Image 1: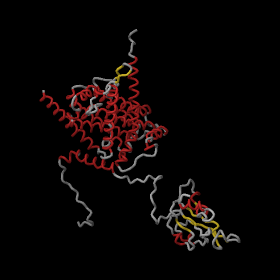
Image 2: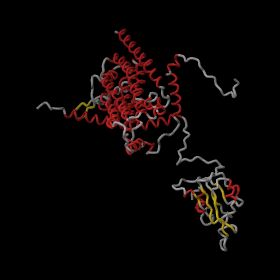
Image 3: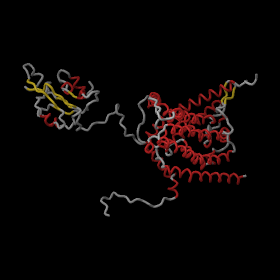
Image 4: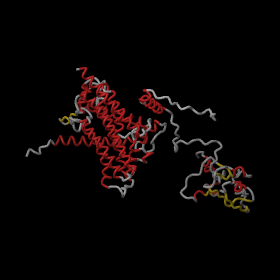
Length: 178
Length: 347
């Protein structure tokens, strides 16, 4: 029969010599191999102290972005919710009132914005769908929680800290020690 | 009333020695479990337990605490007394071996000469054999009392394995006894200290056979068929929990220490530190150096046990029996005949 690949190795069925049947030599050879592993470098990353670097395209927890004046970018257009294949995003829109211009960038804003982190598959399609640069996937991942409810992140959990009023919190969120 | 005139100081001295040796053995066994995990890890390029305490040194205490805190389960269908007796017997048998091991030369304290050996029985090796054979009863009774077919199967395996390998072990020892001419462990070690060479030089094949059989007696990999996980889902201690399970696991490590001590005493000069003249230092210091040397030899043997465990896979049952009956016993007989012929030709 024609072999499909060149990976097959013929089984060696020649009878073992007396030295091979003694096994002791081969056992000692094996023990030398295990002994040599004592001096090999351990690939272990000691987790809480050391952390593996994420790749630059890592998609982690979402953040809701602000502009340079500290106003929320999101206009609650719902394109991210439509793009979301896991249907993890819900929102409610509201109209910006007089005197709220320093809070919201445009006339319409998200009064409620929730992402269910148990549904989210971190595909990043919300980020691609957003026309206002309002949602981004960061480099942290969702921490553990005791209840299912705790995994539904609302605006307080998602909004990036205000550049102008809360610079230290922003620095902490970015991972730069303040 | 001179009938009860016991030498109380002698009794106290032996009692203290027994307490020290038993607790030291248990302490070493505790840390042997840690050593096993560390050695396994290092041989497999892993760091091993390193969280409890500095370098993970408190890990065995944490393990022991966990075992004690666990729920004690005695199956309803088991025979309760035997179920409790099993682990106790396994532990007792493995600890009893330490009675005849000479841990060093005599100490001179408070005007007394204290022998660092619990009992210098003149049939020391025979005693060791009797006690080691008792060890299999712990496994047998535990496996039988569990009322579980896997436990019973594994107990049967353990018993047949122990019996098969004890014969080769005994035959290997007879050759050694022919060269030493005594059954007392103390005399055997003393002869090696004063003589030129250790017994392993005269009995290399005998030592190899004895070592393999000791591994089989301790139920260590590659002879750990009684607890083969994949076919007997844990073997004789399957129904055991809490500290009773701990006793079984612990007895294995105590066994390992004891067989290492016996091998070191019989074939590797016991407390003899090579290239060192003990008469140049004070007798007490020489005795302590002797104890340290024996402990070092034990540690080296335990490392060898572990190294083998993490290198070789387990035997199949028919291979085990083949090796025991068709290879070890004829080899031991041949070794015995060869030794006898050599002794005769020298005379």
